[in-house]
Image (cartoon, rainbow, N blue to C red; front, side, top):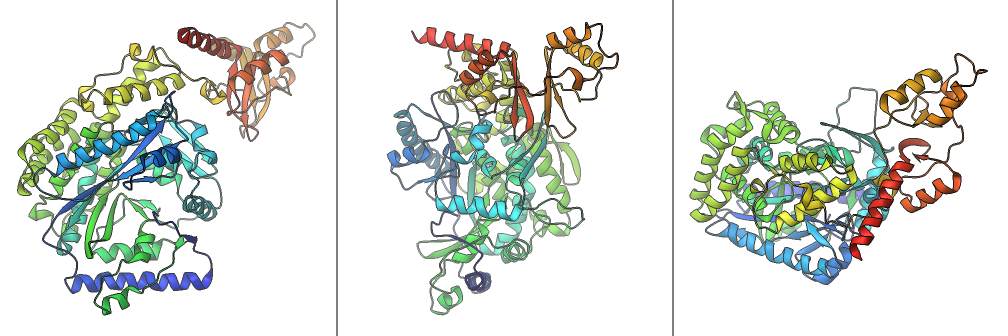
Length: 633
């Protein structure tokens, strides 16, 4: 998808030609494997750093392309949203101080981005999902204006044939429909690459799958989305659902997601590609000048351009990759499930832990499909995504806590693997001590975010808490300490932050108590008394707003001696309430209340009730805005 000249795979003749190239690419990789042309005898590592950009209020930026221009470095590339960028680190041979060198390069490149961002009064945040993401940031105006992203959005929406759906349940629930793929942009990861021996690829890939659950459990860093406490690593279900092209159906046919862990052990590298070609429709085309089989016949190495493009549109959490470096082809395994952040030290520790394990596959786990059920491994992965370090893992046929597995089995195994590769002892100790610190103290990035968010929510609104959390995360990163040493965020750290109160969705109440039109008026009053509320929306069974009832209006009605004894909500509600949209300006909402003489505004989108703001909400915000202004002066 990094290629610029893409077209949607619709035109029949071009599609047929591209598919022919795709099939030839698979044949070519099989031939190169048979002929021993894939590089061996050397191990390399590489990584891709995705990161978030926020403005001075720690809300998603819209200036990624401007910052990219200021950085002016080929290591940087744009991402789907205007608040994300990516850094492609240089590949390094796996030996000696490679992890220190990679960390040093990453710090240097992030420093360039920080310098450019600071010129716009913006900041860089390393996190799996930006806590301060709001609904505004998943609208199309936040999409990076590049043709390939527009093409991706168009084809995904066309294949879906209806709105995308999110249904993620943790402590809270996030259940909604959305008309574009921008929720995918909420995810930022630290993607790790490991070049492996071609004749060991099958065992190594299957081993990578087996490691995924335990490694993810100690690396989780993404428990919040839109202020909802969801999975320990919410990126996993969010990515899968945000670009799921499978529409709803009433049949039992099984169709594989484009974002997938997989459903079986693999038997060869081409086995993965063949399955993906068979199961996933072609999305894009690009011009291909040379046929890969002809290139091989002429004694040259093909780039397998068609295969790489199709592989880039099937998002496996462990993805096989073919590449050519200095004219020599190689095979890599790309780890895509590790989240970004919360510090560079934490990311490099995750990387070193994974690499150490990958380099120390026990003999008994070769030909793994002969003795372990794949479903156990897949279950481990999704349990880790849901519960993180608090999850249980099936390992060697036994159930144990993720914490115990990491401390007693995997850290020693990773240490031995890194030592086999000649990694400097100081690097081994530093990175594995970080993993140990997280496991011993249940102190992953995910746990820090959850516990800090709950602490902030004792005094702040949801919106204020997510912004404060984002800011505190940034300032904690600057201390140079990894996340397990941070300690829970304190309310005092948020007191001097300048909050931006600009749109209705930032202050509206979404946990609504509502009534139906046929509910009796006396019940409505009881509900108001029980919940100590003064405004009650009336909606139908489909969530459509039908009216609003204020307590004063209801009491007056019920005190009328001529009232009907079985009056309903429909009899007393205002059937034409003044409403507002979630993206409308808060100051406009205040003026609208004054102008119309109302004390509340239902928040409506597509005729559906999604929230409510009251005069108390706006008064609170007005006081906070005034306090911010006074503080500046």
